[in-house]
Length: 245
Image (cartoon, rainbow, N blue to C red; front, side):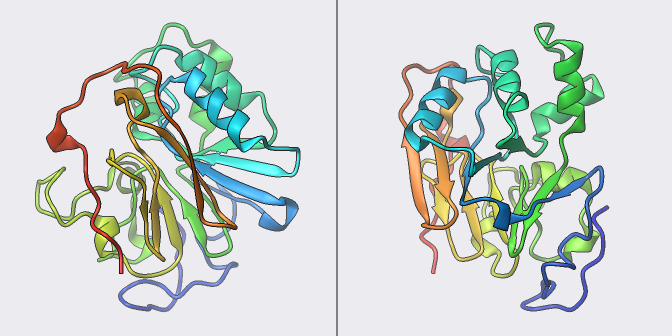
């Protein structure tokens, strides 16, 4: 469970930078944004190493640029090992855990190509990364609950607020109007989602969609188009977001 925050605004905690999720721990990594000139948040990669390499080339980061991914580095695409090693070997690329990493950790799925060191790195990934006013998780948050009341599984898989409806509206990010601003993946979107409170970045790279990043300071989306489709996905499980505001 995430550490408590105090006070509520629009049904959500009114948090300060010190209170947001508490201090570092196994489930949460807090970064000092002042140590970086630029921060980009990157959507679900799913083993699509060439797309990730092209996106990073387009961003052209230097040592003062931090890339934060929303998890699901692995599975479905052709090169999970390459993606894990790409992230693991760079000091300015970090990631939260996605539900597909969680499946590996639980033993529900296996990727024989991953080394023991790669698996240990996957297991080390936190469920949340934050800096002042911003939170990165894989799935999302429930706007009906206080931040402190969320379990790890919710952060990994949150999508629909409808009872039993994974792809039925309302989606959490279309209802959430609070702080911190939440960056997320997991829900495959026909186009990136942006509101003052949430930014959705899974544009279905492994399903023939783009791989998307978001420049936190400027609000610019950076995308690379796919060169191939690695898995098919039905249209009813690709969400066209409603316009915010």
